[in-house]
Image 1 (cartoon, helix red, strand yellow):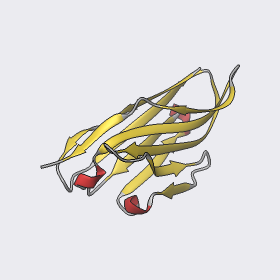
Image 2 (spheres, one colour; image 1 turned 180 degrees about the horizontal axis):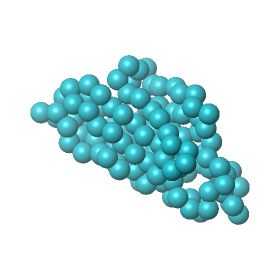
Image 3 (spheres, helix red, strand yellow; image 1 turned 120 degrees about the horizontal axis):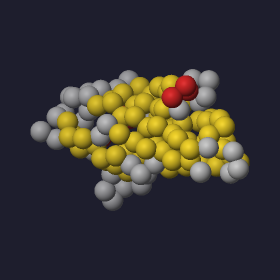
Image 4 (tube, helix red, strand yellow; image 1 turned 180 degrees about the vertical axis):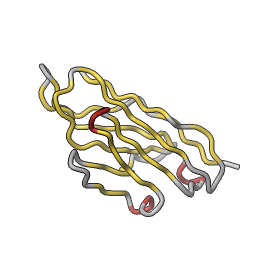
Length: 120
């Protein structure tokens, strides 16, 4: 099995920055796309950013220019650098990944989420 563990969330003032991390562990053979989603109270989960195993990235429209996704394949970790944060960025941020694992094949996994609150 594979586990995804997010970290780096917290409370930040508007205009501030946070860096989220998500580390994958377990019986990993290969990790393909890794993504960040977020879900605010009463809202649907939305894609924040994604990155392929060769570094191709994509972003949700409201995050372009403020958020940067990156990954360290040697550490099985994906990062989300968030700058110029706004109150509307407040949400639980979830890591998601397509992982080929030994014994389990190719599956999609979710982390448990980390809370990001942007407030003065």
